[in-house]
Image (cartoon, rainbow, N blue to C red):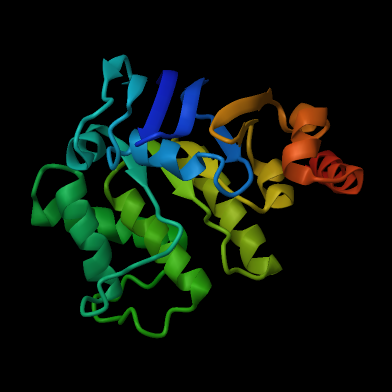
Length: 251
């Protein structure tokens, strides 16, 4: 579904992403991990059109999309969530999701946007009452709203950016299960950026690890969690690696 080759992003003299290549198959969940500043968000921003690549190719379903504007990319079927939810506070929960559906699908049909909003809200477990306000939603509710907005755009590929941030342990498990449900029931392919490695490892099919803008490891969770390079730059200690491997065994 997605083929990325030789992706590079430079900001002046600083190279944030250096010659990164990877593929994502339809129906797959790919985990994207790495320390702060490793280039994860920059890759998401290039995939979604926020940043044009300095070099490289991004092909989605065989079509080159590198450098296209965000609305062109989302209309082709790539939706994304953001690490920090920023809903329109003056709109209701339903209107926030409806708005995403109206513009994201590219059809500008109010009826289709309403239908998409209802389905998305039901999928994530938020109220479909059109009067329900955004105020009062906690961290978990705002993450669900962010996910519902992305789903309302009818994506084929979902870029999920740190869906577990700010959640407690039970909420993390629910959010992770939600992503797997979205893949299993809706057939949506997912790339998931996350810092909570133990939870991510239970859900993803493969993991790609970045460090200083370069890909240093890629493979199934059990192999990546025991990779010495990953232990050194991301996990930090053998004890952390043992915990990650144990989490994978429980998967």
